[in-house]
Image (cartoon, rainbow, N blue to C red; front, side, top):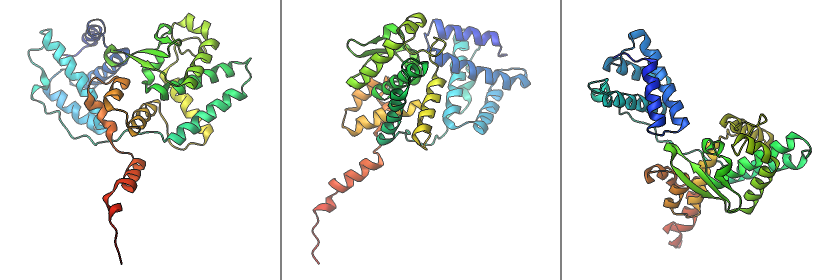
Length: 308
């Protein structure tokens, strides 16, 4: 069977309207399927076992194992759909070995003192800005974004997709739609964070109402994920921070630091919106600082008295 753009579009519409997949998932599927179609163009666009096997080889040459796995998962799901629709008699992946070893990578976190350093810089910029300028308003928004990323462990895509009706300042709650459009409620428990969000909402109220999204940009449109990344990079540079910080590292830090405070992993699973506890268990590694504290205070060697 030849893979065509029309078949891809039909499948993506099925994923959007029947499976109710998120815009981010749909975007990833479109990219992954288009990449395979481009690769297969030189081989008559056949969705065959041979082409898929050759494509896997090319993917491993260009991408890290995690990215390869995601791209293959997109293709497998597409093939399953074609089998379901009787377009294919069988899934061509059936006799292809797609399992491979992935390196076990620990989540990259931000040291707490570095987070504080970043926040201090953002608050200083806000304090020095002229309240009559847009610079002041954007600084208010930046502080609110940073505070929410760290306070809730929210994904940057979830944060940027928050709508006006999803944010309740009266009780400090957020209605968040995660992967697979799964809904969860997050609560902000720190008054400083709530105050930062309130000040932002008051300054941008008319723009928020007009756009419908809670976080907006200079053009009164939805704040983009890339804008958040650029903002964090800018404050890190102003702070003299040398490590590369991403929005997702706030999520990793949120989970890891809560675990170090002995918060039950099942609660953290709910905060993060993980459907499986297995996903959350990547955070159960013991940090270097925690290892040092444990070995200094708990090791049985401390009970040994050696007389010389």
